[in-house]
Every structure is written in structure tokens, then in C-alpha cells.
Length: 436
Image 1 (spheres, one colour):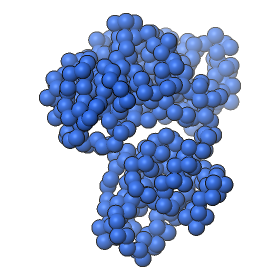
Image 2 (cartoon, rainbow, N blue to C red; image 1 turned 135 degrees about the vertical axis):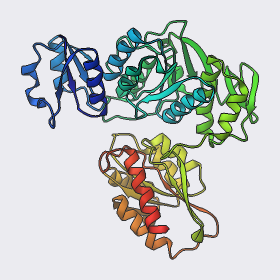
Image 3 (spheres, rainbow, N blue to C red; image 1 turned 180 degrees about the vertical axis):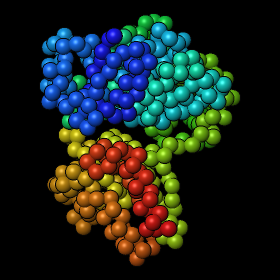
Image 4 (cartoon, rainbow, N blue to C red; image 1 turned 90 degrees about the horizontal axis):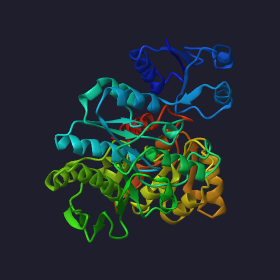
């Protein structure tokens, strides 16, 4: 019996364990809570055939020791793909990017299902790929959101349709520089042939620099110029044929229009009718925690936006620019990113800022350097303290024009929360307790 060692007992690790057991493999966990201690692993490596690294674990000394032993290091995505291609005819649509991948993934799956094509959104979006493939031919398409972490340690994985939404610096606490992060994203198109499709955002400079890394057939999207899929004067086009008007789309903002171009590109490659596409884009709703307008405090003319999914600088910059002088709640883990673009946007567009998390001191310091008004910076460390102070303050203020309280952290949540979902739910709970 073959034996696999799984490093990390989170959702990904537990799911791939079930899949390996389905494949009649023996498995053992490395986890300081329920498995072998990470400090004792080397003694157990002699009879290991495969080593599976969970995506949240960096490329550390233990991984290097495993590779030195000649043991292949893969991830859950690779294991699931190899199982799927032997047991199923299901096709893969794979999505990555710095921002927009969750919206794009969920809406592609939603549109396919609306067209009567059985599909499921999986991967980084919450449902493990290795769990879905055990259902064999239940789905015609698996729509996979893949983070850069999940795109590491791949070998045979191949998507029928792949795409990178956009690229901006992120996760520099994991990668040596932004270029290594960008290059990792391009693993999304590995092993493709001219029979496969790669949807490319020609407006993104960093993507265009790496076109030589794409081997699939290109389908180009743009918000700036005519291409294969583009928007012009409130009309959306595919191959110069009008699909629909853009005025009535339920997903608002330029960033969502970019996501929609990818959604439409996939739907036309598959052959979905324009009427189904139009109906879906008019009626689909925003995702929870992503630019979610969830409460209006009518007595004070205040609107609350939950953008807890704003886990990097670029997403928060776009969120800020979507509103007129919002009050911003911001902060989280320090990813070692250059904060200058965010600081500039805050100085020019934010009325007041309330800071939380380990990044708060760095943001406060850089705002002071650019002479952002000191009286408008409130470094309160925790979300609970911020909401308490805002609750007291806003009850004594009447705004003539609608004012937005924007919760967009610009970083990941792990310094204070389990994940961005928990962070967003706590924010919404505090708002309703304090203001309702």
C-alpha cells in the first residue's frame, strides 16, 4: 500500500486525506495538534511515497529536507486533479488573480447552472477540490478559484479554460518579491495546449509581460480597447457582436465590469445564449463581504459597507475610490507590502481613518509623514474598540449628505480573526448591535 504524508490538518488537508483513502493509500498527518510533530517528521520519511503540503504552509526547511530525500512534494490540487482525470470526464475552469477571483468564480458557476450546465465553484472559494472530485461525473464543469499558494507544487494539473483576472503586489511575506508572486500565478495555465483556452486581460501590464508563458489559445478581454470581449459606450461585445447593455448589471463598479468580461468570455466559449447571459447579469447579487452594502442608518444618513474580502492594497484602493470621502476602517496582517499607493489614496479620498491590527502602526506612521490630519487618524487596535468609539461619536453627528462607513482592511485577517468571513461577520454584528 502506498503511503502519503500530509502537512497540515486544515480543510485542505482533511479533504485530501479522505480522497487518498478512497484511492486506498495509507495517510499520516503532520500537525502539532492531531498528528506527528513537525519536529519529528524526518524520522518517518523513509517509507513515504508522496508528501502533500497544505497551501497555508510556506516553503520551509522541513519541505527542503523532504525534497532532499527524493520525495515528491505536491499539493491538494495536484492530487485531486490526478484522481479526476482517471475517474471523470469533468472539465476544469481555473481562475486566479490578485482581486476579483472569488466573484468571477462564483458567478461563472452560477451562470453555467442558470444555463442548465451542471457546475460547482470549488478550491479557494471554500469547497475543497479534492472533496468535489469524489462525486465523479456529477458536474460537467468544476470552476476552481486558485490562490498563488494553491498554484505551488503543481506538475500535471491542466485547466480546459484558465484565466488571470489581474496582478498587483501581494503576499510579500511569502514570496521574495512581487515578480515571484506574479510568476507563480502563471502556473494556472501550465500544461495547456492549443486545444485549451486562456482568457487574458490585455489591460494588465504585468500579465502582458508574461504572454510567452501562455500556451493555450488566447481570448483577450479589455476595458480600454476593442478586443475579443470588451465594453464600449455602455455596451458589452463578444467578437464585435453586441451581447447586452451594461446599464442594468447588478454588479456595480469598474472592477466588477472587468470580472463580467471574464464571465462572458467563459460563457461564450462554452456556447451560452446571450439572453441567458443578460438575465443572469441583471439579477445576480453581490457576494457577502465583498463591497456589501448591508445596513443604512437612516436617522444619521450613514451607509455601512462590509468589504472584509478586501485583503490587499489594490482591492481597498478600488473600494475607497468607489465612494465620496468615506470613513475608512482598515488594518490587519503585515504582508511587507509597499504602502505608498494606499497612503496616497487615503490622503486624497478618505475623511477619517480608524486603524486595527498589526499593520495599524505602520499605516499611522506613513500617514503622518504625508501630513494627513492627525486628528483624523484613530489607531484603536481592535474592531470592537473602533465600533464602540464610532457608535458614541456618530450618535452626536447629523450628516446632510449620505456618508459611507467603509470596512476594507487592505490585508489578511489572521492576526486577529480566523479568516475574512469571520472578520466580516463580526463587523456586521457590531454594526447592528450598536446602530440598530
